[in-house]
Image 1: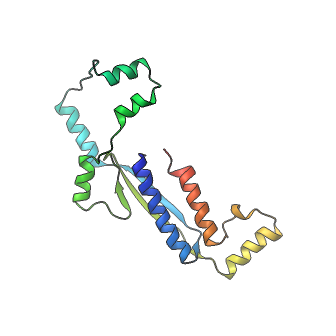
Image 2: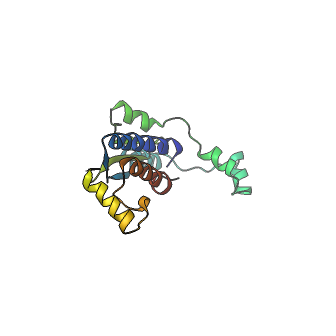
Image 3: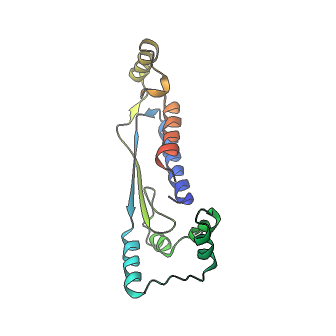
Length: 167
């Protein structure tokens, strides 16, 4: 994922889990689907059939990269793209970007994101479950599911940041 895409996904996650914690809810999961954009695939297929692929060996960036393939600066010069792609702009113009669907900055992927699962209120039953597991069974509180919504929210966000939405 590109940095801008990671930021968008994590902002959506943060927004949703803050809402859930504010309503005393916990025990939820996230559905994140990364789909290759069919319009991007069509564009690539058209590009291949209409143009011959030309490699320019006199491109100074490519030459530098060939000399030193581990040079991250050369790789960034080739791959860096700060402007939204034409596909991204087209997708947005058609109103296809919405709260749960986002097209990547380069137009290649569509991200579908939603909080799913059974939304459990942190009520007397869950507080009792927490007490029993922590104090009677001597389990570490951050490892059990029955925790207060603020702790659940922080743990969920950390897991998403460190294990799921990574580059």
